Length: 454
Image (tube, rainbow, N blue to C red):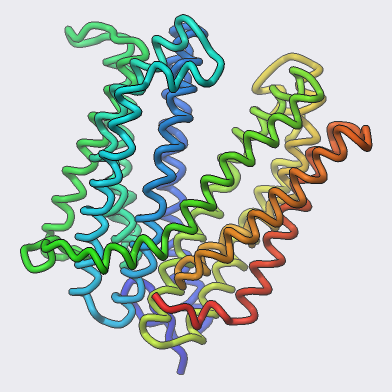
């Protein structure tokens, strides 16, 4: 009888596999959704200060996201190794991985945050902005960089808990931290309870305070008697070979995200060839995209955990069943979302802006995103399955072939040599996800990921 492992629970039927996938996925979906909500609320609050502070914080947030890519290397390796060890019933080794992830992320946090703190002004200026934007952006960056080490610690503990199958603790901690972040944003940005208004600086300080609270709560969570993983003296000794092993697994995932961020920028540059309305339409579409792929992120996290734990338990068949079941559920949910987005495309675009030209450019982009939802479900979930198995290099290959070869390649040809309309630039996105999902499906079906040594 096959058994799929999910958070230490053995699933011996398709219905139980489906149940455990969903039990792992929904807390992750809510966690990522709350993070997106905080970003949206922060933008709305800073936007009330004017264009300068808004642009400054926007640039600073882009730098923060870029810095975060470094920690993906540690987080991806942490999830893969913790899942393997938990699946094999070796909690002690899983706890050692958690300890090493904290050491590695702490070192990387200082290496990344310190130069950004020191050179915040020139870094913001490099985006081509000037005056108030540089001043506000640099101030925001300096405040938020102070919290990066704490943010890294919180994220590593959350990754380790997810790898061990506990999605609810990161959700609970994230909910508290995000509510605190929103409240602190209001108090520090606008001033309240005797605290003077700090403007954009207040947004950065609020984030740092929230990161610090998250790290404290996460450390306390590891001390609970019923915690899936703990931090104690026996696992606290640095183990650099284990840390190196973890980074080797996660490094391709970090490179993948780095290339993805560059790709988004290049795709925007192509859209900009069609004018300001096209650029505005792109940013509207990106906001829709960020919300629509939340289920994909959740099922990706669930698949990573279940596949990794099943492989750790020596049950390849269970790992494969878990990955495909996560794909099926993700496709069902995201296809339904796609239908709703397609039907409401004009209303969605009009909710963001009243400019007729922007709406006309945004509607086909939104509908393209709607059509891409099933493909995105496959891409995200199968990517999570492969990363859970430690096969982190192949998703990077698919990104280069799909995003750079198909999306950017066709979009550039359509906009320049072929002279096609903007809708063809948007359509290139479909080709990208079709290629990436097909390649990942072929890889997962072929089973070579089962042979990856972590």
